[in-house]
Image 1 (cartoon, rainbow, N blue to C red):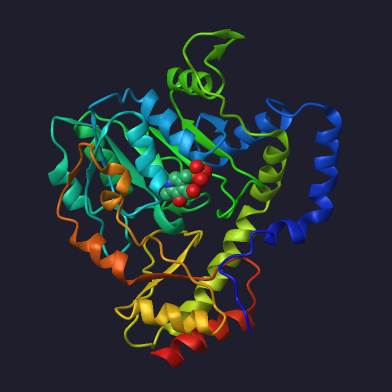
Image 2: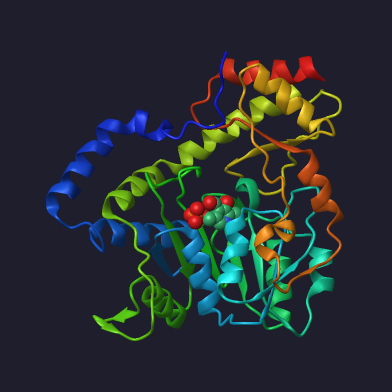
Length: 365
Ligand SMILES: Cc1ncc(COP(=O)(O)O)c(C=O)c1O
């Protein structure tokens, strides 16, 4: 049997008959950006994330850069972030000319270690970036917000992977002063291309974010040097269709995760994901083993594609050469980077595929 890591077209294949007429309507209308679907998507995102305002962007990478810029981050400012994330989290900090300060993660959930974060904040810290990793919300997100508030610094939430997840009553996209979401094709809700969004409850920030994403324009007049970072109407329409079905999609992802958990629970030498928030969207199903590389090769030889999120710490990325940055003790992140392996997961993965993967893991170990 061959099992891919992810089926990018899973939603389209199941919903082709709903999506194609919408694409036809948009392509025939001549209105390709800043139209009705973009407005509807922004309203819907604000509604599901419980925010006042949402601005769609060309990507979450842009959204993060706009968020940091709007929060006043500039050349030389220190920004705390975890070293365990996709490189875009770091890129946005560097695009501002800011100095990345890397703080270790917890091996329980792979997100910022709150005690270490608390120790790392100094009067020079100008922002904290919280990454909501693998489809989870940080179980101590309220505490992280309190730390930021106590020090009078903005919390920027990178919720690229976490749409629909929540901890208690706080949904992904809510805890940051400014929060960002991705619709990259690897995500559970994705564009057939790229897309992102940035959310806030503050009217002035909203106005700045809108300008940054759309040529600096306000009422058609450029007010600042902006960027061109819009989402296409076709993408907005297809993202909206996926958001309508997000509760069912997340329920199905949780069923898949449960199946993995029950079939792997008694397997020695692997660590399964811990339930760290009220509702995960299981963007990634990440297990850990000291024999990670051998296991990965064995699975590959048996037709199963896996990935490593993330093999290289952000603090070790080449793009930092010659730049100022600081890394605290990152022992947990270093260990995680050597041991994690992401198993195939998408909503329509079959029971037979899950069983084949679990049996293969058992056979190897
Ligand atoms: C944690 C994280 N941050 C930021 C991004 C960047 O998102 P985008 O690809 O939409 O720019 C991604 C994924 O692509 C991500 O996983």
